[in-house]
Amino acid sequence: MNTFGTLFRLTTFGESHGAAIGGVVDGMPAGVTIDMDFVRSEMARRRPGQSALVTPRSEADEVEFLSGIFEGRSTGTPIGFIIRNTDTRPKDYDDAARWYRPSHADYTYAQKYGLRDYRGGGRASARETAVRVAGGALAKLVLRDEGISVEARLAQVGCEKRAENMQVLIEQVKKEGDSIGGIVSCTITGCPAGLGEPVYGKLHAALGASMLSINACHGFDYGSGFEGVGMKGSEQNDAFVHRPDGTIGTATNHSGGIQGGISNGEPITFRVLFKPTPTILKPQQTVDSEGNEGVLAMKGRHDPCVAVRAVPVVEAMAAMTIVDFLLINACR
Image (tube, one colour):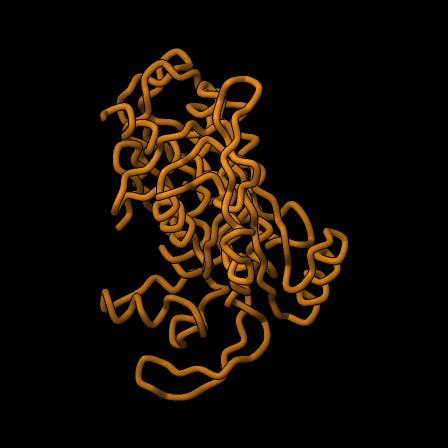
């Protein structure tokens, strides 16, 4: 599947070392002001080559809109766009043409399609997430008009939760030619109660699916999540309260803003786990398509911790999910 969403839909295309990547957003409401400065700022947050903690690949990541926008506003028709690849180095992946890289999609793509684009992983590369951020920027503009915000942050790298220690750890594993995993936490505020479609269209299930579609994502939980396993029901239950402004809310938010698969008006909170970047410079045992054993030491430019640049990607997927459910709710 290369299309995400039900009514607000993003279809993406392109490979890591191809001429360009791009997408088509269908279902964008008409009349939304397209803030190009905001789109650029969102793309800049994910752009590679900005610090020693990320891949040195240098891409401008300028979004070229081709359709669906007239006089600065969305027309309601499909919004097509491309992001050109300007700093490709396919020769860095010559060794990968023969050998299956451990924990990559090389073997599975070859089994499914009978061939694969080995240049940086081709379609399976995290380069594709730039398109998601562009689509997410458009979704955020819709949410801005609705008073809804989506904010994520890097919450943990390895076992470290303090920002200064996270940076030291990433720098250390990079020097070793290795990588490390991380956790991104996200909060959605201003979301109205009532989003979600029981029983098989639950909001947290959709958020989980959208997060797990991100490259290197290996886990998702919301509210108190897995840590809540040590709590009793009397401790985890969110008591309802009547607020001074006449609204009903909860005294705590262990539910993460979702109950019965439907948003309850409280902040929606969740966490996303990213595994260590599978492309490392250390030699690794592997085999080729004929089953011959060998040792592969990758070259190229890679993130020592993918979770760092995953923050805006998490926000983008969350924003598109919420817009999609807003549109679904409007059709009820």
